[in-house]
Image (cartoon, rainbow, N blue to C red; front, side):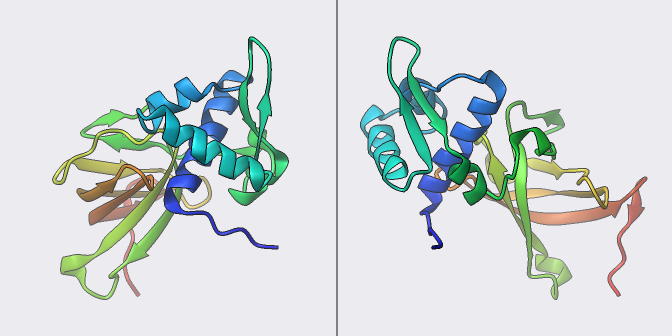
Length: 178
């Protein structure tokens, strides 16, 4: 059975996974609200939905909160959180802490004037404005590094659309289209 999550539910699950992997303890709704949406009720409703899908579980008690289930990790294609490879996001020249790139979708590759990428993030989305400088990478296998200018940042969906200025592989070698 395949579960389709909305962008906001996927983002909430991604942020929970990232926070849980960093702290190794249940994450409170207040902590999630600070990272995702200041409305505590929104987080409560999202966590209820994710619990019903068995992607997260509640931990009760004074050190309680939420933690992802193995199905939650699997839904994000993370087999083992220890195997998670960090792909950095650099915003205006600074590495963004607690945020890693989850996926990169290249779009409009046929038009060099409008070559764009959709950057899907794992972790809380930083404040990014249109026109800001964005660098992704290097990626683990190909050492791909994408540089560009932010077009739109979707804070609820953890997606940044970027106009690509350059894509380089390895030690700064430009990737040529063939």
